[in-house]
Amino acid sequence: MQSLQSIRGMEDLFGDSLKKWSWVESQIQKVFHAYGYEEIRTPAVEPEALFKRGVGEGTDIVEKEMYSFKESDSESAQRVVLRPEGTAPVVRALIEHKLLQVLPQKVFYMGPMFRKERPQKGRYRQFFQYGFELFGEASAASDFESLLLVAKIYKAVGLTSFEIQINTLGDPEHRDRYRAKLLEYFQSHASQLSQLSQERMSKNPMRIFDSKSPEDQKICEGAPLFTDFLDGEALAHWEELKTFLAEASFPWKLNPRLVRGLDYYTRTVFEIVDTGGNLGSQNALGGGGRYDGLTKDLGGPQVPALGFAGGMERLLLALGEKIPTLPPRFELGVVAIGEKSHRLALGVVERLRDLAISVDIDPDSKKSPKAHFKRADRMKAPLVWILGDEEINQGLVKIKNMQSGEEVTHNLKSQENLRQSYVDLLSTLIKAR
Ligand code: HAM
Image 1 (tube, rainbow, N blue to C red):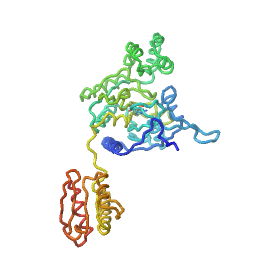
Image 2 (cartoon, helix red, strand yellow; image 1 turned 90 degrees about the vertical axis):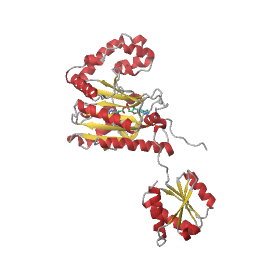
Image 3 (spheres, rainbow, N blue to C red; image 1 turned 120 degrees about the vertical axis):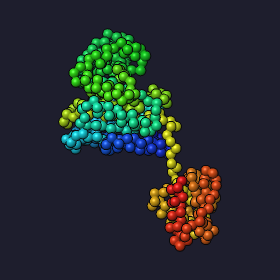
Image 4 (spheres, protein in one colour; image 1 turned 60 degrees about the horizontal axis):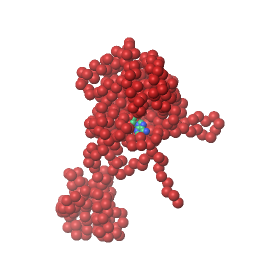
């Protein structure tokens, strides 16, 4: 029979790569906690309407990348999707549970998202995001604090090769004015634009900036700049943020063409770009920005908000070998020779596990000493405890260091309660490593 395989663009995670992944997650969680963010978990399946209204009908995500199906077989069943991103679901949950009545709200999430994109290095159909969303802070100071948090995430995992690009998209009225001017400009160059950009022109001319075609990019260079259309409070917000960044000597780069692929953004937007070269064309490690209109658009109160999400797979690719050495799976392996020693060893092992020490022992006492040694080797425990009749009779603890091959014998303090004496000495030796 033909064997079954995972879905294209959806990966299995296991072994050392998952260990690295967990370490990265734990580092990121520490940063979120330091800024007072609490975890939120929302379902993987949401109403399709949430993203149509939240992310936007004209976006690539909603138009062609969602896994969409009917919730049930009934005629009237709504269409649901595997969530393509985390912001709209978080907003939905906070509105639904009336959590936007007490502000600020700070939540973070980690979990799988789904987009039916063409898989390639750094781009998957199931990918994991780590993200945070902040509700109830309107000031430029909170934009600045969020950017500090984002930079801290990458520092916490040891990544130095990244750049933070920032832009402003103003308020909806600025965007409308800009969009109209931009449309005029691109229309006058329509014949030189790629097919994709021509399609994007009518839906959202700002998305033409995302085109990878060199011809399109040349035309983009001459396009009007958004900042020329900014005024009033949105301009003041932008200027204030730039002052914060300058005063803190925060490293950032203005990217006037940064528009982001989701419709909910207002004012500040940003993207973290990997500059280490491990990612190829999919070099956006994460992105985010302010979305002051989304809570209202999704049926909640008007609450200023800001957030960010990064891609876990891309971060791990960018880190490459830079992750520190991870602890081994087992701290101790056991070679117990003979029925009596094996029985004693099993009791000791369970007590050590009560102390949260990870120990491997072959449960089958009938196997040969050679088989036990082979297993200890395979399990890659740094220390192996060797126990036979002789060691029991003389009250000895024999430990082999698997790296150096050296064997050291220790004396038990007491032979009265043999099992406890073994537990005490072994746990001390392991913790002292
Ligand atoms: P996004 O830019 O669509 O933003 O996604 C954020 C990050 O998720 C990307 O920078 C990338 O690292 C990763 N990512 C996206 N698509 C894929 C994919 N197909 N394969 C691998 N990684 C991927 C958002 O999702 C917004 N919700 C961010 C946000 C939060 N804005 C405000 N709050």
